[in-house]
Amino acid sequence: MSLARDFRTTVDDQAQDWSDMLFELRLKEELTFDEARLAMAPAQLQRKAGERDLFTFRISRVRGYGAHMPLVEACLAKLDEVGIVGELELIRVLHEVEPNWTQGPALPVR
Image (spheres, rainbow, N blue to C red):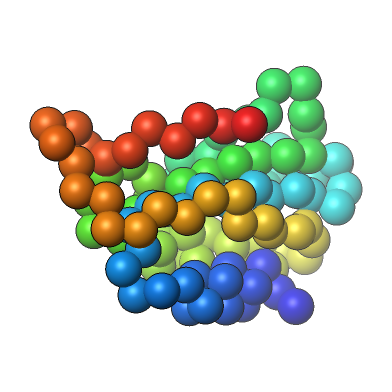
């Protein structure tokens, strides 16, 4: 399955009240790291310290920290187009977050 389709399926499987999601993207080949990082830059990737094949990123539905879902889907589609293979894993989902004087929840990266 393509990364963009896998991402869309994962998001669509969530309850409609989701606020924020944290994902990990693990590349199959470490040599695609730089190209993947460039293609996914708008998604605000965070590199996991000491890893050259693992990124984390967040999406938000309405407000807060994280990229907009359609933007991330488009970035993942770029990876699919150039043949970069990887695995997506949903790490955390928050529902009905109502920020109080902040932009959103602070999700720790594990």
